[in-house]
Every structure is written in structure tokens, then in C-alpha cells.
Image 1 (cartoon, rainbow, N blue to C red):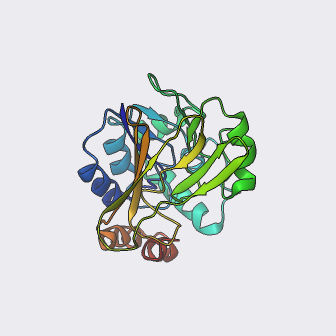
Image 2: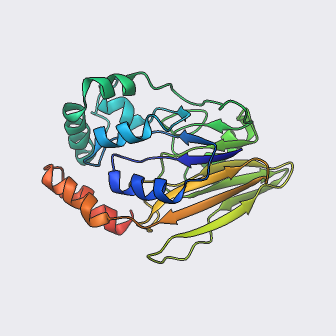
Image 3: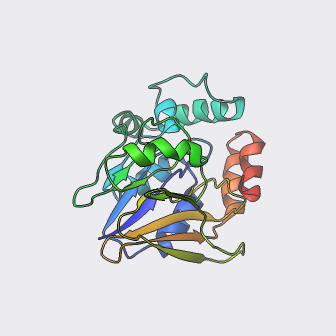
Length: 250
């Protein structure tokens, strides 16, 4: 099986289209949540990704934007975007978001786990080895795919050896990829990165491909029409910071 793993699209239609244009060879699409929030194309993104996803885990922005929980815990910029998104969503897309399952989930025919944040707590960020320590030991499968941090990479463990994973990708304005083998007996927490709002100082859209037969994960970065995405944000009257940070990649 080849699975396309996406996370944190955040209503960025241009970034999602760029990813789907280059990631055409896959058997399943696993969506790790935060489909909406921040960006200015919530309905277009849902309409595009919804029929393609074989599995979707709800994210915290999905949960807040559809009204399941309050936006009071968000910073002012995220809160403004959440309220705007709620008002823009069609009734059908609003109901779809409300029905998304909480992670962690296990896809059919694959011995992996999918979560938005930590597999132990959907709202917990996994940013360092201290955060990864408990999930790596307690998760139900040897591989868990997660998002939430918008940082591509992850963490691995084999016995007493612990490692932080950072894809060896050049910071260029072109598409690039890096493949990581999965040795037997290892456990991994893997973040495909954010499609729509990366925060690892690389503005390009991020995603990953998991190949169960080759026992490998390939991290990808792809450029997209960032100017068009920023223009949508500004024309919608969303906070300017949401447009500026796309260029910064953080």
C-alpha cells in the first residue's frame, strides 16, 4: 500500500492543489485534520479533499470552526479566523466537520495509527523528545502519523536508542523529497508537515508518502501559488498576519 498523508491544510486551496497535482500515485489518502482555519478557502478545500480521503481525523481547528468547542482558547488571530470560517461554511460542510471522528484512528489494511496531535491527547503538541517519550511507548502500533505542530519530521525509538527525525531537504523554491527507511523493530512518530501553513521555516507545502511494501516513508515539499493564497486571505478581510506568515514559513 502507498498512502498519501496530509495534515493541517488550513483552507489553503492553492497549496492543496499543488500537492494533489504531484502526489498522484497512491492507494489511500489519510487526512490528519485541521482541514480549515486560517486560510480563506474552507468550502473549496473541503469539497476537494472530502471525496478523496479514505480516513480523516478531526483537528482542533475543525472542532472549533464548526462550533463543537469554543474559540476562547485560541489567540486573537486564530479566533478571528475561526469565527470567519464558521460563518462561511455551507450547512453540509459544517455538518461534515461536526461528524469527523476524534483520533487516534487505525486505517483499514494498515498496521499504523493516525492522530491529529499526540495519540494520547488530540490537543497535545509533540515538539521534542520529551513530548514523544510517552506516546512512543504507549501507542498501539509501531508507526503513528500525527500533525498539529506544522513541523515536518518526527521521532523514532529502538530499544534504548531515541532519535529526532528531520528530513534532509534543501531549502529551494522547487519540489524536493527525502526517503527514510523503516528498520525492523523500530517505533516511529511521523509528522508529514503542514500542507497549508508550514512552521519549519520552509514555505513550501509539505506532505508524506508511506509505502508499506518498501517499508519507507518519503517526505515531500512542493511550491505553490502563495501570492494567490495570500490574496484570498486579504480579500476576505482576515488578519494580515495570516498572509504574511505563509511567506515566512512559521
